[in-house]
Image (cartoon, rainbow, N blue to C red; front, side, top):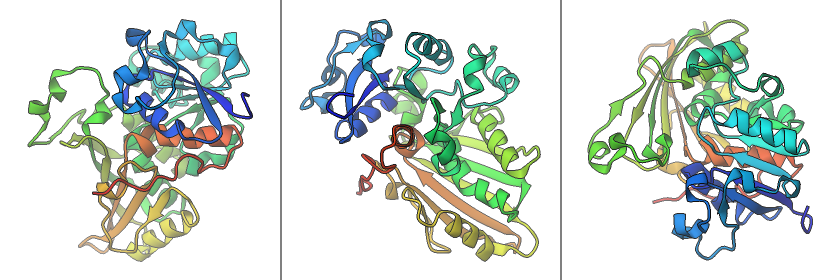
Length: 351
């Protein structure tokens, strides 16, 4: 390590999650960014791609093949889905000492057969899949500390897993009666040019997409089923809304006999007491996405429904921070033995 700092590479630095990693790590006191990759923009300065970094001294963007892996301690992979398995496999063959945090979906699903079903091709690194740790820090903290490869969860799934898994584990809700209605800002679709993401196509309206087939369903199935000890298949519908960042999930649950809204709130408040990045609001208070914008926080609200056995749980995160790069840095801190909150204590941007 250079001057006691961990040497960090960011693969795919020209995307939104890559730039968010740079924003979070640029002032991190325990790391030094030594490599940034972006194949199509190789040779450019980071400030040419993202002018907000003009005052920082950062490495130039290079191709992955140009990285000197002997000088890297940990790498973040912010590459498109389907490309990361082979990349990480090659990096580990070249430099087995490196730790990896992968922000794609390539290692999130523990069952390779389920991966092939949802992503349409066989898994290309089965031996690495066996060692990958799913990176919801609040649920897998001890495993992440020992991991060489962390599979960062999706933004929708982080927002829907944090409030629901503790309720399933506690037997507070009926696992077969979970409905997740979630909204995402436009950055959740990435930075590549797409007609459907043009300003005129997105503003002044909203729409559902991936209805009945969104790939994040597989992560919800996996984590909810693990919590229940049996197969759970929740309903999940994502929507695109005209804001730049944020996830807002309204989750409808049916309580177990005798639990009620007070019991649901108590389970979540007890589970997350002392957690630095998950805040359970007072009973009946509704969170807003602006409460967490730019921060690594997840805010959770519990509200009584009209029916005595139904409860509405609302969860919100910033899709680029707690839903992606912030949670990835949280995992990095654990993997490298740093205090978990280092570099992540930003207060939300409001207004």
